[in-house]
Amino acid sequence: MADRPTQPVIVLVRPQLGENIGKAARAMLNFGLTEMRLVAPRDGWPNPSAGPAAAGADEVLERATAYEALSDAVSDCAHVYATTVRKRGVTKPVVTPQEAALEIHAASGGSAIVFGPERSGLETDEVALARAILTIPVNPDFASLNLAQAVILCAYEWSKMAGMEVPTAEELLPPAPQEELEGLVSHFEALLEPRNYFWPESRAAASRRTLRNMLTKPGWNSLEVRTLRGILSTLGKKKPGKRD
Amino acid sequence: MADRPTQPVIVLVRPQLGENIGKAARAMLNFGLTEMRLVAPRDGWPNPSAGPAAAGADEVLERATAYEALSDAVSDCAHVYATTVRKRGVTKPVVTPQEAALEIHAASGGSAIVFGPERSGLETDEVALARAILTIPVNPDFASLNLAQAVILCAYEWSKMAGMEVPTAEELLPPAPQEELEGLVSHFEALLEPRNYFWPESRAAASRRTLRNMLTKPGWNSLEVRTLRGILSTLGKKKPGKRD
Image (cartoon, rainbow over the protein chains, first blue to last red):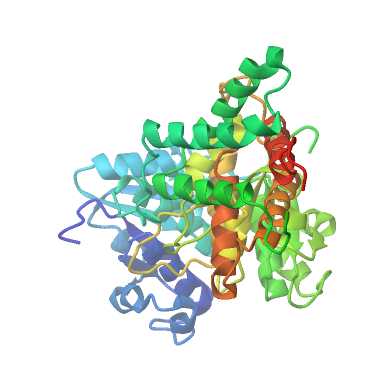
């Protein structure tokens, strides 16, 4: 945590299945969260079903600790968010995962995001412990988010602001310089001209403009321009095996 | 779709477990997406394991249709996003789920987000079909996102913007649908094949992929595709005025 002071603790209250604890751990680590706390897990802790479901997120499970009550689990946290999907008769600020992530990054003092048991959700007394309610803006006609999914959406929003390394798919080559594009345009024109493509003369200017617009639109890089010129050269030649 | 023109189609390519199809359907409906397409699901379609895992998202499964090939599944889509987590040797724009959601909302023409099989992900040839790569910025040290989680993050980002007014970028013609691009690719290939462009055989697959990548990159509209096909027809003919 030392290097990531803004990382929120993920608190699972009375989770029922070890498998769901494992899946939540996996979802956390997918977005760089490593600090899990459990409140009165139904089947005790550690739970042998958690490991396989974590699919390799063992470091999260190994560091996870169990508490008897939510108040103990969040005693060192200055900012506690209680997640609910339903409306609650509680007068507290309601934030989205994105807003919570913003606040957590800006906060001094530790933060915790608290998730209730699989089916029932948090008790009213537990929600009362929190400073704010975190509600994921889910489809009101189909709001059955499972635990790991609720966790991953919160972790994802946090990581979006954490400046995590984005796996840039590839160092994209820059678009080819204009002179290479000119070469490509000329190559096209040189092939099309003797084939009467620009005929009649009254249409020639418009046709040339259309061609140029099409060829500048792609933003092809030098390699791609060279490939296309190779194709043009091929098309300009006669088919092999035919004598003429 | 009529009332939700910006809703992307979710395409699952060669999904292995019916359970995962069901979970993906649930994740979709959680954020209001209802349009699922399947490409060559391993155990056929419909799959009795999907229903229980969908946890009530039956309407998504009932409307889901199966296709033999990805190109068929996205033939009516102007904007195809291929999701990958790994680096790929493909030169295409790379977008985040958030950026994709913005584009999808602003787009004219249908969109599709394509997900690969559970373990292996999409094949290079399938990625080549797409206009852009969608990469979820996951923890690089623990990138094992499961299918439903990848789906839910994309659906979530889409739904975040679904209520928002998006300024339509410009009255531009939309990119041509995938089937018109296929026609263009085939036209190129038909001309190049007899001219031995794809020779030697060991280079053929790579050359075809490069060609396809080049031709999907521009985002040409139907008019432009038609113009280029006219050019190809012209180049395919013999030069006039020369008897042979």
